[in-house]
Length: 218
Ligand SMILES: N[C@@H](CCC(=O)N[C@@H](CS)C(=O)NCC(=O)O)C(=O)O
Image 1 (tube, rainbow, N blue to C red):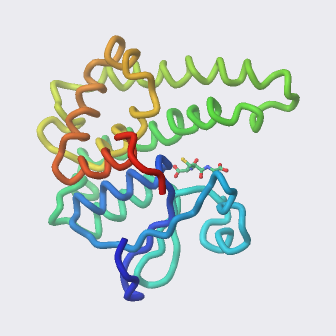
Image 2: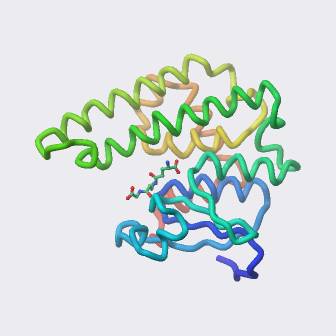
């Protein structure tokens, strides 16, 4: 992407990984950043060097301009929203709207993202290999149930906060791409609409196309 000046944000990520939500948030905020590719398929996230960035060895992580690092997608998204208030990517800290917003961000991270990991890596959650397929099967319905809970609380939209866009919408858009589109359309049409609306935003569309448009790999 662009040259590191030493004072810009650095995003550690990879194509189709959780770092894509952070790319979208930076794009929405109009913030230039340096992208550091960490090929998780080649297990670069397990390297000693990356351990120093994020001891949990997952993507995404962000190095702040002061040289310290943070991880966990929602924490990074909320930092971007708070650090660049002109972009209006979250309700004002301390407001009731913000409390609701952050609650659902946590809900998606704790339930949906974690459920996706159980679908993807069921062996990590099973003491013996023969249990892995039942872990995966249970995770599929667990994730679906949590989308249905969110569908119930969504209003007329198109975003969680109505007409007002936020980083929660970015997070839901990212996670929704990992669901079968036909299931989402049939069972959670409001979530599907939210996700499609986010995908078509001018700042998000190039990120969406890069990751989900079937183009070149990194
Ligand atoms: N709790 C983390 C989860 C991040 C996560 O699971 N990232 C995946 C990529 S999408 C990862 O790095 N997986 C590598 C691994 O678990 O070994 C967050 O919300 O940011």
